[in-house]
Image (spheres, rainbow, N blue to C red):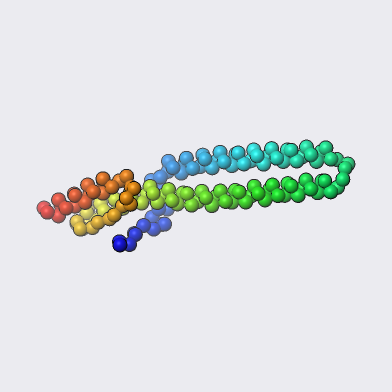
Length: 146
């Protein structure tokens, strides 16, 4: 089986190829953060109302409310960290799915330009650019015959 020539640095260098997807991801992230912030603010407002209703009452109830606030804050921070990890993994995967075939095609074109007509690259079965790669391989074969 042919060793994959794709690397993380290639995908980072060619981020411009998938800018549209990154913008969509950014807007999705902003909506998610806005919803989480709304939920957090709503819950804190409810807790603040409970605290104001308890003014002058049992100190144990006030400590219970502050414990609830701490738990809520930790859940909020943990969910944001998990979400950021998910976004990072998603961006890397999208970058590979979008830039990978483009990079492979560019490498084949570069090899053909340098006179290496026997150079072949395989794309994944689900890649939409397989027709272009097949056309490039046909071009290389016809150029080699000349």
